Amino acid sequence: MPKKVIALLGSPLLDGNTARLLDEAIRGAEEAGCEVEKIEVAHMDVLPCMEFFQCMGSETCLIQDEMTEIFRKFREMDGLIIATPVMTMGIPGRLKSFMDRFQVFYMAKYHRGRSFISPERREKRKMLFISIAGMNLPTVFEGAKMTVRAFGEIIDCPYWDEVLRNDMDTIQDIRTRPEVMEAAYRKGYELGRLLG
Image 1 (cartoon, rainbow, N blue to C red):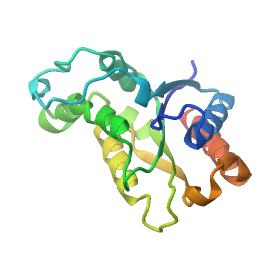
Image 2: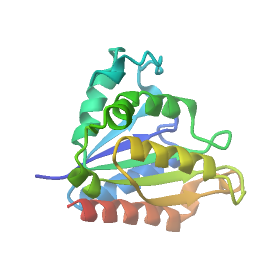
Image 3: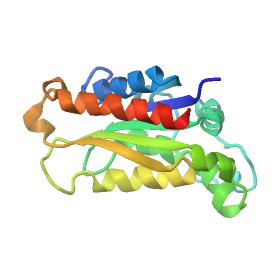
């Protein structure tokens, strides 16, 4: 049975530079034998976390929307690819709001002490992070990396590796950097092989 990978696109641009890199990583993971589902987060109809804390004693979220099915998929997945541009030295708001909805996982793990993911499965699950940034600053990815690392800990899918490219305001089109496109493919493929 093929390993399941979820690929999150954090950019609202479905054919932009971030999406192109994600598609290469998906191609790599699929060629390594994985089944990949791409989720375009910015185009989902989900509400932000309202911090009702109802999930403190429950395995479900009080808000009933598309996230109900997403939670199930995140419990079953073997690997995760997150691809996002850096915005205001962090991740885009819709992606952050999506991650915040995993309060259900947070409460299960840290308040009830019963993570949805067993220690054995956590050991095998892996996250690949892909990101681009407009500015050519050495610290431009720090905020985004801290957020996705924390998210990975909450959902028990630890940060494994990354493909990063800054200075996109100058570069403009990622296709002019074939080495970055190749890196995304290679890391997707490697992720798929490790999960298999």
